[in-house]
Length: 212
Image (cartoon, rainbow, N blue to C red; front, top):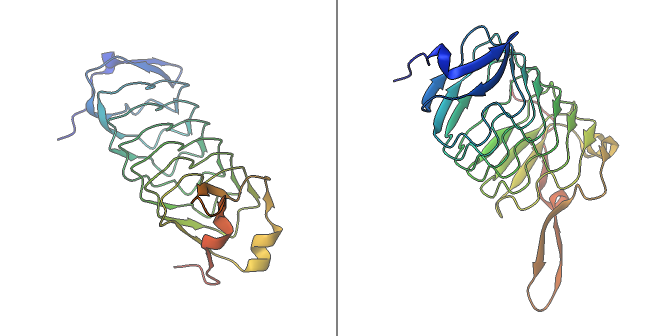
């Protein structure tokens, strides 16, 4: 089961968790932490699961990048900021629940999370950054709320061939979203007879009603 990790495993300064030097496994971050600092767990291949306490408000860039054996993470609703590359290449992470206080999904936040199957973007989110879910090769189900006003480039590039995107709004709401030029690129195909880009716009379903 989960045991409280030794405080000596962590370097914490003024509430910012700077680094981790423990044995890994299933770890629980101490309650005094308010911010998981830049690169704090980057490359910790011995981590298998992480529980974040609700004292934490921010997860900085590269905080968990290349944690290749991380299979589960609990992010509390207190977290309002998830930095760029925060979970880059966490290729065994099967599930992540983005908390309902996050307003921006930063560039490449979940890039290369190649075991993620499903992502629900909460309706606190207004902006999805470039490459946010690029190379999430098993990602087959995404929901996007009507609150999103800005979408970056290649957000779903090279996701699962079975990807469907459900948007809780009308097609005219969708048209109003400001989108980067390459937002629509999904994968490049070359069958010998024809080649070109498969597009995200072919995979979108409009759901007028938001689920309760």
